[in-house]
Every structure is written in structure tokens, then in C-alpha cells.
Image 1: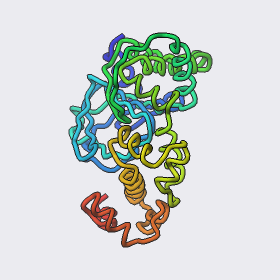
Image 2 (image 1 turned 180 degrees about the vertical axis):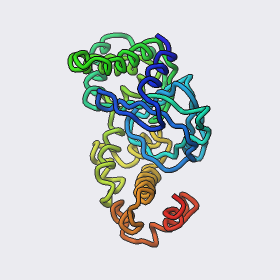
Image 3 (image 1 turned 60 degrees about the vertical axis):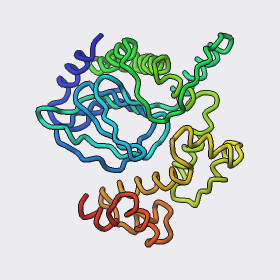
Image 4 (image 1 turned 90 degrees about the vertical axis):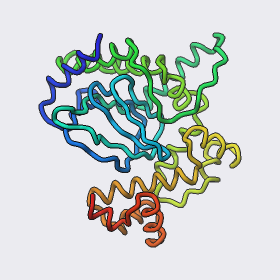
Length: 290
């Protein structure tokens, strides 16, 4: 199976720029034909499979370009800046966005870990990463294509969608990024659970001690493991998550003060100060320009 067939399938289903939901919840097709500068976003656990064009992201101040040689994996919610500055009608960004169903991924990750518990595992040290890339393996390409084909037949969709989705997730877990997904969804997923806890309490005054106690770690151990997984300290991460969510809300038309309060800021001056330090613009200037 080739990526060219996936591209043909997407072009057959999409005539215009935008995103289209497939018959399987969480899987969307996208085509972007206008340049979009990098702007704040929050990636949820997902896979972005680009079949044509390039995507840009800024992580830790470093610019990264992604194309169709690899798929992008996000194993836990992460604040990021992303865009498609090179997209055009002649050079569109085309691909598939897969929002990870945490229930299915956790079930599969635990099944794999249980099935391999008696096997000798090579002593390989993998880097802790929450956003990483993986080569397009044949198994992933084949599983993705078979999932997308389900839209062509309502009966196939009703009967096979769960099995095909499990097959796709299994390909991810067996691929180059499998170790990261197992770490986030299988045994030893403490940092991912702490971030999930934070994501649902962003509007509250969450402390590092609160996050550490949720997973039964000391502050010192939690700080070290968190930075290994996200390349940010817990304090930096919390601030980035809140500011990125606020910037997205302001872009969508939310009043600046309301966006600040919804993200747990009680001082508008502190919010403005941190916002400008992060994005180089005051919240009011950001609202006018975006």
C-alpha cells in the first residue's frame, strides 16, 4: 500500500480547503491551501499524517519542519506553536489527523505489555518525548488506508470500524513511536496522568505539589521526570498551557479579561505581562492582529 493511494482518496473526498470528519470518530482529513503563520495551539494526544506539503511547529523556541517522510505523534497534551506558512493552492498541505481514543490506546498498550512481559526486552534507552516523529512503516500505511476506505460502505463502517481502528493503533504501538505511546498509555504513565489532571483544572490554582501528589511522587522526582518527558519544567508547562489556551480564546473573539479569568488569572496586569513576554504583543494587540 502506498501514500499515493491515500492522497488519491483524500483528493476524491475533498475539493476545498478545510477539514472533513470521516465516519470514524476522531479521524479527519485536511487540506490547507492558504499560508498560516505559526500561532499558539494545544496539541491533544494525536497523530498527524502528512501525505503532501509541509507543516511548521515551534518547540522550545526551535523551529521544526515536517513533511510526508514521517508522521507526527503527540502522546500527551502539549502547548505548541504551529502553522503552515508554505501552503498555497499549488502546494497544499494534505493529510490525516487522528485524535487518539485514550480508552482503546490504553487497552492495547496494556495488552502488549502483558503479552511481552515474559520476553527479554533489549536494553535500549529511548528518549522521553511527548512530541516526536516516526517513519511511515508499511503496516501504518496499510492500516490507515483500510480505515479510510470504510467511508465508502456504510455496512463495512458499522461492522469493522472498531477492529480497523485497533489495527491502526496497533501499527502505531509497533512502530518507531511505539515506546512513547506505551509510556504515555501503558504501565508507568504517571506524567501523562499528571498532565491530564492539569488540563482539566487549568482554571484553578494548581501547584506543583498538587500535580506530584496526584501520581504519588515527591516534588523533586516529579520535577525531574516531568522535564524529561516535556523538555519544560512543570511551572513553564503550566504557564504555556494557560497562555496558549488564552491566546486561542482571544483569537476566537473572547474578551481579553474573560479569557484571563477562564485560565485562572486573578490579576489582569500579571496576565498582560506574561502574555507579552510569551508572544511579543499585549493581549489587546494580539486581539487586534488575530
